[in-house]
Length: 283
Length: 347
Ligand SMILES: Nc1ncnc2c1ncn2[C@@H]1O[C@H](COP(=O)(O)OP(=O)(O)OP(=O)(O)O)[C@@H](O)[C@H]1O
Ligand SMILES: [Mg+2]
Image 1: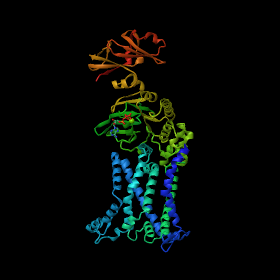
Image 2 (image 1 turned 30 degrees about the vertical axis):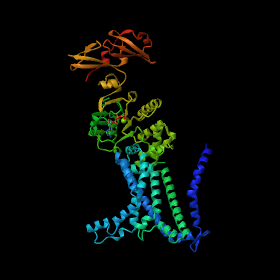
Image 3 (image 1 turned 135 degrees about the vertical axis):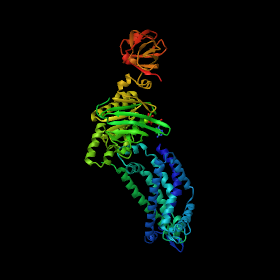
Image 4 (image 1 turned 90 degrees about the vertical axis):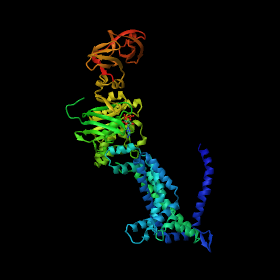
């Protein structure tokens, strides 16, 4: 049985290796190569990694922070939305979900340009503020800022958070909620002790997804971030294309990847601990 | 079961409508401390709605609910001195057995030692002492049922509510759990209200039975009263085996189509007479009847008789030699004492 299974796996594994693992390993090897006269040559040098740590260290931290913030905001907002759809909307719950799916089709750039037209110098928000007399001239810091990047990313990634959270909320039976209330739990205690512990896997995948997508993004900061809101992804692009420094580009992208994985693993370990000893538990 | 002291639970004029649907018509119910009360009725008659109003999950459309003299009509379930065992149990899958049982006390921030001690006590009461560290999904249905019971009992509720607690169990386990419930009720001396559509379960456990039909309470009383003196045709028919005979009352005298005549006060008009099978006996000078069928059940013999009116009468006899009298086709004369029959005005 297992032998048959293994035989079946061979082609799939081969495809995976060619399409996925080998290019990635090659790219990783490139981060130890060097560039002489605009020519890439095999080497074993840590120059690219050194460049990553010294030149891009702060930017990596900032990028991770943005990812963390966007991930947390999306998870929190996604939970609120999914919770309302699951428990408050009655039979409209599934309809609300279809609506979030539809916004996914809206496209990525469309959303960014929508925010441009809202936050821009002659955008909706500035016009509204001036019309209300709260400000005399357009506020320049609304667009091309860190805030604009975070807002646009949260808006874009929110559906990716809602879907896994809603899926795990559907498995929370109403009887457990009623039982908790019956045993004296307040509305807040029901959420923290009954709903969230049962939803942890969904919350975690929502966070991981949004965090990874946000930390790796380069289009949103390019179009909305200005100079202050730059993120590491833009510089990966820069190193690969403009600078033709493939080793640096590779080191940057793998550095970011490793940092993200470490962060996710740490959170997973924390979540695992919480699963085993949830709030409200008594030894 | 009327007691001299004020009832522990008092429902006055409680009703509930969902839009145009009346789930529970206005009803009064008094339950004394220590009572084991059954709410009995067919599916969809409003039993769960009534129980959930007592628990606080559903706000009544009208009426008042008082527990131990305190009006709780507008209080939520977390503020009522009641606890509930849900039909689907509603156990917390992310907690162990002991953590499930301790949940309510942990919310009250009781001292650790007290929680541990009372958890152990509650688990002992349902005979699950050694299961504390198990996770919920590694329990059988009957064990989950016991955890749900322990989780409610540990709160020492003034009134314990059970919504079809045994419906999901197989027959053998159900009988076993009925025994357990009786034992626990005696051991802690609490007040239990449970919902069931199984008449034998209601009679086996309760000392007070409320029979419901289509949102209305048809009769409230002790099991034997409900069995022998059903107040309505529905109760007579729903509760146990029964024979219902048609007749007519004229000036205080009832004439049955089957031929019997007796005095009975009440308005003129059609009536029905309800007789329980084990109260019917062979009687000299009784109604002539023909045996159509006789089935031996081990402890008793069930005989179907055809009356002159064409109506069927059921007789149950525990006489060991009864089989000889009741061969199909035999002619017998049958009757019963007037005190064992119930006359009900026909609708
Ligand atoms: N939330 C609700 N909205 C509308 N109608 C309801 C609601 N809850 C119950 N009903 C209706 O009220 C009536 C009584 O329901 P209830 O659940 O109390 O019945 P039940 O006696 O417990 O039945 P069962 O034995 O099948 O559990 C039913 O006709 C049901 O359709
Ligand atoms: Mg029900």
